Image (cartoon, rainbow, N blue to C red; front, top):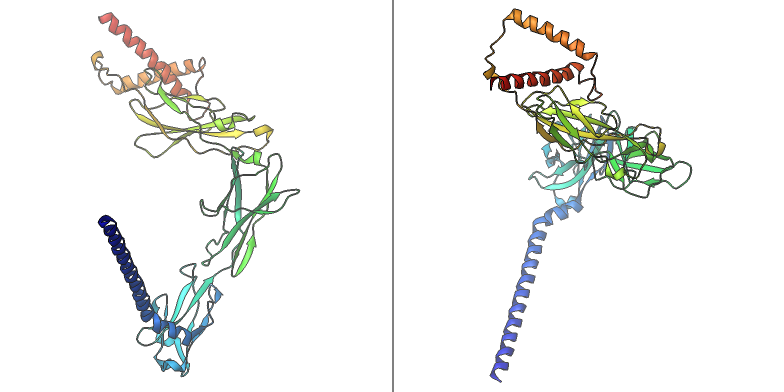
Length: 417
């Protein structure tokens, strides 16, 4: 019995505690609202008793504007005591005029483009700094015709388009760009909806037709006008790009000090499509940002880089161009570059045991003539490697000469032993 009474008392005590806390929270909320109301009451009242005209005008760059602040007689202040600010900066007194006891005007000449797309703030103040009224100025230009509209499709599954806003570019006021597209011969015009990527870019994720051309264009509008780009016609199969080649592997070619072997995989997303891929390779040494590009490695998935520096770390990337998807006559679009893969060439062999020393100039010239004679003789018999002009026959000959020299050194070493 006592236990039941104790539980009842505990529940009653907790209920009273919750009621007190709830009342305290309500009182605190009321207090905050009252403080907010008291703090902003003067501005709330004056906002109804003063006004700036014109309200939120939209003006071309270079325009002039005369704005008037009219205050109610209920405020018991004179227009002579008012002052103006633009974006928080007080305007010069010589730009004001007192039109009457309750009207003050300000004139602005040769207006520049708005500092922010949400508009510049023109504000009328009473002498103590209190804000009486405000207006937003939108100063800019009408959009120019969008240019350079280009589109691409990743693996034929989607469509992305990019454009430039025109030669002038910045309009200084909020300008809306809408990418529109439709099937060329039939179908309803659609608006692209995903503009979350790069500026002046839109993404269509699905529901695209192939073997049927599309028309696409961009419309630009703001409060001062509108403009429309040229209409482009495209077939999804003609603008295909793909993922970077996977499984890029860079390795040494035995002990050859100036060569590396590069291998990679075909784009897996296009394995069921009829096309012929082209590949590009680029590489750089570890301490440099400058890439050397092999423009056309053909449609093979391996290549040998020659003419490299011995004992040097190289970074290599590969990209793919899917040419002629399902017989398309258009050139494909290059993919992004693959992630960098690093490998190092073998170091230069230590030849100090041979007892050789630096040659004299005359000996150098004799050696050069001998090497050139060997090179031209070799060139008639050999040709291999990547089909890129940056890899010279001379580089390939140096590989052959290097192997011959190694064989010669090994014979000498075995003779000494």
